[in-house]
Image 1 (cartoon, rainbow, N blue to C red):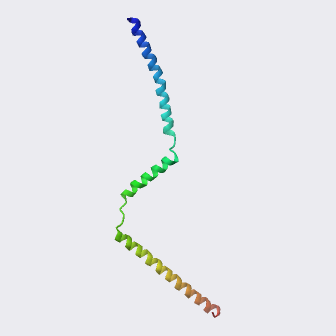
Image 2 (cartoon, rainbow, N blue to C red; image 1 turned 90 degrees about the vertical axis):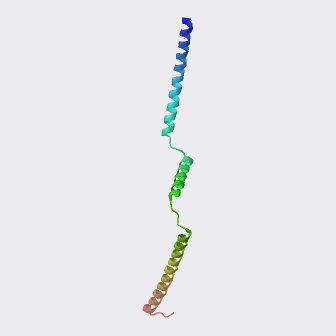
Image 3 (cartoon, rainbow, N blue to C red; image 1 turned 180 degrees about the horizontal axis):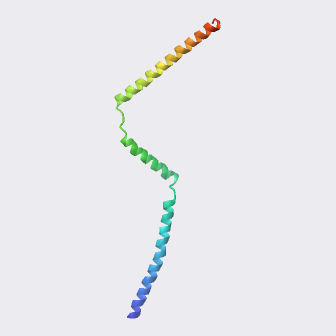
Length: 103
């Protein structure tokens, strides 16, 4: 009986000893994975998921506000274009007047 118990204990001890180095190896592999930077696609995926979450928090303007903004920008561009055209014509006439050239 005593021999059977000692054999079992010795077998259990050897099994435990064999299992411990495997645990250490996996711990080392996990430590290496933690230090490793994520790949390009993982970084892109993370970026777009953060953008998506940020866009959910943004309060978007209503259609009426967008139309008002668009009209304001278009009118401003037209006014700036007209002012530039008038200044160009006035500068051209002033150059002709001061240079004494007749067109």
